[in-house]
Image 1 (spheres, rainbow, N blue to C red):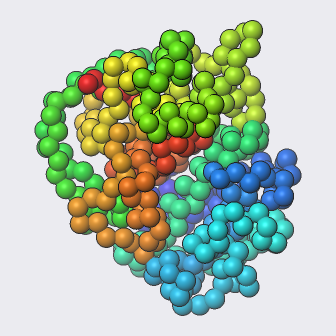
Image 2: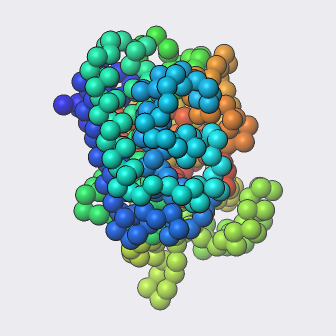
Length: 398
């Protein structure tokens, strides 16, 4: 059995087989939550820009695994696959590079039962091929890629459940977020290697090439900004004061008509939040979540602080400082998503390159991220207006 806390980047054949099976079981457990409220039917799913129909997601995961593992595609280009799909219309339905997002609700997809059978067949064939694959980084790269892809889409399915207010089934166990003690730490700075070395294990293309950066000393929060801290910003009129907002933030605020983070509400009892369709009192010492980059920037401006750069975040997380806590929520940084020096796109060309310059770097992980995916080197990235993810932030001294 694979160690549940080990990194998938160095998984052997046996560990990959175990992890691919567990990832698929989790996918099906998450899909069952949608089935329980009849959202396995795309017609019952709101056509939001930030979600996919769960039925399409299920098919896409099988298609991706089939594309890279059974069809021996070396890139994401349509003519890269050396053989056809087991599903006659597989490419027409589930290739995210050629099927526009807005059309995924009206594709006439097979029913859930048929797609589940396809998922099982693809996984069985992938595991059979894995059992006959050389135990080397080069040979196992596509298997590790497929595992990471399914793990990331698993978190996306959880985000969709939260966005649509769908309850979780008892099969979905999520870790609790501890109430960490707030504080600030000073780090001395120095030389730090950004990115992942490519001389062993799996690396994402946007983590290469590894390179040295020089960092001056800085002070950074040891934990994420809490609900209590963020409420002080709200109570002080932070959402109404344009001084704290960037130009982009003011435009977003006007469009959203927002006076508190997503999923917050208030009644005679005080502030409440919605968690997977259940309304609860806002836990004061939990980190604030579901905030856009603009909200994080406005809070920092109000507090006389700033967001960390991704280099500062990685240095702090990799420093081993016992007070630095990460992994409860993804964290906004002040760094735009840009290629590292010497960047070259991998075969999955749409993973990073299309999003440079327009997206912002998030670091860390969330409670919904599988432990095997967590790494201080992992670069997540989203558009600045997104607030549906499990995302928070911490601040640095100016």
